Amino acid sequence: WAVTRGMEKGYFARREFSFTLRDDIYVRYQSFERPQDLEKELQKACPYKVDIGAVYSHRPSQHNTLRSGAFQAQEKELVFDVDMTDYDDVRGCCSSAEICSKCWTLMTIAIRILDRALVEDLGVQHRLWVYSGRRGVHCWVCDDTVRKWSSSLRSSIVDYLSLVKGGADTVKKVHLSDPVHPFISKSLRLVEEYFEQYALLGQDILGCRESWDKVLALVPDRPPLREQLQQDFPRKRDSVQRWARLKALSSSSSKKLPSYTEQEIMLQFCFPRLDGNVSKGLNHLLKSPFSVHPKTGRISVPIDIQRLEQFDPFAVPTISSLCRELDEANDEDKDKENEEDPESRRRVRDYKRTSLAPYVRVFECFVEDMERARRGELLRRSDLQGDF
Ligand SMILES: [Zn+2]
Image (cartoon, rainbow, N blue to C red; front, side, top):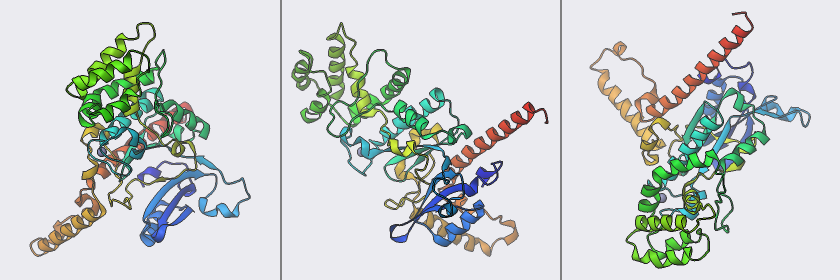
C-alpha cells in the first residue's frame, strides 16, 4: 500500500485491474476505492491471474455509465515485454516456450541493454524488472513523468530501442550504416561481453555446416568473402576459431566501404527483441508482479538487477514450494508451542518465512526509492512556492 502514499487523491480508484478466473473467464475494468478493497476482492474471487491496466479519467468499474468517448486512459507505467519465443531463429538449445540456462543469457543481455538505455539515454529513474514466470521478462518504468507519456511517444521509444527487423522470412534482420548511433555502439559493447561464451561456446553457432550456413547467409554475398569462408571453416577446429577467421576476412575484404558484418551478426543473435505492442498502447494490460504463472506454477518475481547474473529462473519459488514452506513453518510453530511462552514469539508475516522474502525485499526497495523521490519532489515544489 506504500505505493499509494502521497499519491493524488482518487488515483488508485481510477486504476484498472483485470482478473482471470477459473475456466479462463476474463473480467476487465475492475477498480477499487482503496488498496484494502482490492485485497478483500482478491481473497474472495481467488483469481488465477491479475493484470494491471491504465489509470483512467473515471473509475473503470463505472465505464458503462459514461457517454461514449468520455472514458479515457490517462496514465500508465511504460512497460516492456521481452519473450524468448521471439528468439527462436537464433537459439539452438530450445524452442517456443522452453528455456534453459544457456538461452537465459539472452534475457540477461536484453535487461542490460534496455536498462542502460532507459537510464542513460532516456533519463528515467524508477524501473522494476520482473521475471514473467515462464520464458521472459517484463519491465515497469514508473517515473511520474513517464506514466503521463502519450502512445505516440511510447511508440517512438519502442522504435528507438528496436534494431532486429523482419519476421520469419527475413534472413538478414540487422543493417548498420555509418555513422553508428551511440545507442547501438554502447549496446554492442554489452553484447561483446557475452558473445564468445554465449554464442560461440554455448550455442556453438559455427559448430557444424548446418549452423554456420545460417551465419554465412548474413555475410555479404560478394566474392571472395562468403566462398572463402565456406572453404576455410571445415579446416578450423571450433566456433571460436571460425569466428576469428570471419572477423579477420570481413574487415580486410572491404577497404573502401565500412563493413559491419561482424557487428550485424552479433546483434542479430543477441540484441533484445521487444514485443512493441505491449509498450505502445496506454490501455494494454500486463500481468501483475507476484502472480503465479498458470503453466509453470512459478511466481513472477522482481529481479534484482544489481545481481542480475546470479538470477536463476529455475530457482524462483513456485506455488507448491511456497505452500510446503508455509506448512513446515506451521509445524515448527506447533512444536515450539509447548516449550515457549507464547508471548515471547513475535508474529512474523507469512511470506517472510518463505523463499519469497528476498524477492519481496527487491520490490520494497523499488517502492522506497519511489517514495523518497516523491517526497523530494513535493519539498522542492513547496520551496518554489515559498510556503515551506
Ligand atoms: Zn535454451
